[in-house]
Structure formats: structure tokens, C-alpha cells
Image (cartoon, rainbow, N blue to C red; front, side):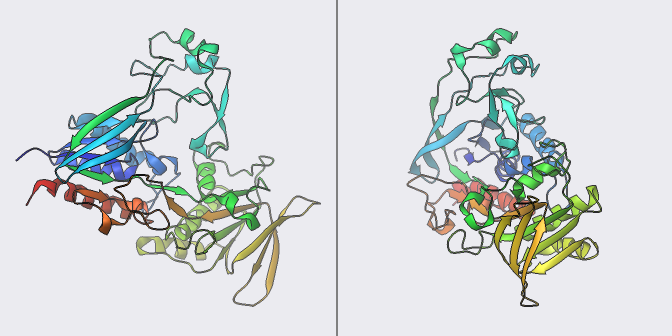
Length: 413
């Protein structure tokens, strides 16, 4: 029987888990990621469920397992362009974007010092900036600088090239087409936050102090744009009053028709972050239904015991700004009292839902929301975790392990 060779598409926590489990069971694995580094959305978190671990707690261990396992081949800046063949004998065409910094990089930082160009930092959801040549974060894997081709002046500048003592920069690098034969494929392509600018009534594009839940996660993170301080973007002051708006664009036919299942837990978790850092902050959480499962129910019990957090059953329909004091005004109907509430807040957090990352391959059937439909996949192709439905980290890891087992069994029977 020929040896299994499994391609895992997606280098977030689910893809990493699938790759490691398959490789440690004795299979060859190619792990690809479209970004220049692994880690996915978990790397951007302050803490994740269910134990509220910091992201590096799990990622550091898994990165070490990848480095120590010669059966895993990692290709970053890489995407699938075509799949042909069938179970046990797939032909996969990949495109690897140009990587202008090679493995000679020692992360000395001299290139960054001389770079004259800034770019928005997607790692902080564009709330801060980096240079055009930058280290994504302190635990980046691969651990090296990368160049954003969109912003780099290349040979019109050359300063990074001149500063590098290790021959680590090649500004002439080109994209490569790679063809691989594999026995099975697992899509662990993950999720992205819903675009809050599409929810016009909630003012995300109008008011800088209306932020999203993923932005709040970065504010709370020690390696975030404010080094873990909860500061409002408009003036970098500590907000004294904060509102969380649940189901921002979710369970809404105009936006996301489904519940992402994790937003309630995330907001409760973030409310706890805030109180831990600034105990006097007044927080109100507006919700339609509080949907929590398993150990995440503990967050609700903990929040109910905190006097400065109030849970209000009511959907926020409009966010405006008071022109006199620049405070944000949230309008909502209190379902329990039947009264319309209009309250001012220093900052408002929109709990936006999870969308699947887009997959544009003719072999992969997705539903109207973009999630892969597992029942329509060809034999030997599998979907893991958030590529097929919204899940939290704990559930994603269990599902990723299951998909690794299915991929291993591709050549059996």
C-alpha cells in the first residue's frame, strides 16, 4: 500500500492540529497557509476558551512539534489554485507568493530601522502600523521578517537591502507554481470577522470609538496596539462606560442569517478582561438571547456576580453621537420593560459574527454563507472546524483531530 501524503490547507490552530496529528501517526503532511506565518485567528487573541490560555501557550508547543517532525513540510504564502484526480491520487496545483526575505534572516531589526514606509497592521486589525518590512509578531512562525509588496518601494528605495548583513533579502523574488500529488486533502481554512462597516446603523465607519469584538481582543492583549491597556481609539483615554452590542449583523437576513455561537461567550470574557484591568468601568451588555454551552456557562455566572456589569435583553437598533460631548448614544428596546432605552457610552463594542474564508475552487461546494458542505465533498477531501460551521477553539481542535483520522484512513478499504 502506498504511503499517505496529506495536504492540509490552512495554518490556523485547526490546520496545525490536523497536520501534527496526521504526521505523528506516521503520515507525510504538507501544511499550507496563505499568510506569511502560521497561527491564524488564535494568534491574535488575548486569551481563548475554555481555560482562558494566552495564545502562545498552545501555539508555542505546536510550533515546536512541527519543527521536530520531519514529516511536516510547511509552505506559507501559499494557496491552492486547482485540484484534479481522485481519492488516493489527487493532483494539487499551488501558487506560492514571492517571499522577499529568506531563512537567512536573524531578526536583527536593522532593515526595519531604515525602512521609510509605513503600512496598516492587519495583525492589530489595522489599529496600528508597521514598516513595509516587519516581523508579524514575537512568536511568528517562520520567525523572520516579511515584506509587504503592496507598500514596499523595492529598488526605488533599497535601504533594507543595504542594511541587511546576512543576504536575507531578495527584492526580485517571484511567485512559484508548485504541483503536488497527495492521497487526501483537509480544508482548515478558518474564518474571518464580519465586516462591521456593512452594518450602517451601528456607526462603525462613522465613529472611531465604535469597535468590534476582535479589535477589543487586541486592545486587551499585552502585544496589542495599546500594550494591553483598554483605551478608546479617538483620544487614547480610558473609557468609563462601555456597551457590548450582541448579534451585530448576526441572525439578520441582510447580513449573517445564522448565530456564530461564540459571540456571547466572547463578550462576557471581554467584559471580565475590562473589569480585571479597570474595576470601576461601567459595562452594559445588550443581547437578544445569551447562547453559551459547556464550560463557557461559567462566564455567565461570573459576570452576574460583578456589580458593574449589567445584562440587558434588548437589541441595539441605532448608534449615534452626541455632538456636544462626543459620547456615543445607543438606542435599544428593553424587552423586559418594553421601554426604549437611549444611553451614552464612552466606547461601544460590536459583537460581529464569524464568516468562513472564501474558497474559490470548482470541486468545493459551499452553502449560501460560504461554509463548506461536507456531504458534497469528493471522497478523500475533508472540511475541518470553522470551514464548515462556526466553532470555538476547543470544539475546533476536536473536529480537526477527527479530520486528521479521516484523512489517514484515505487509503484504507
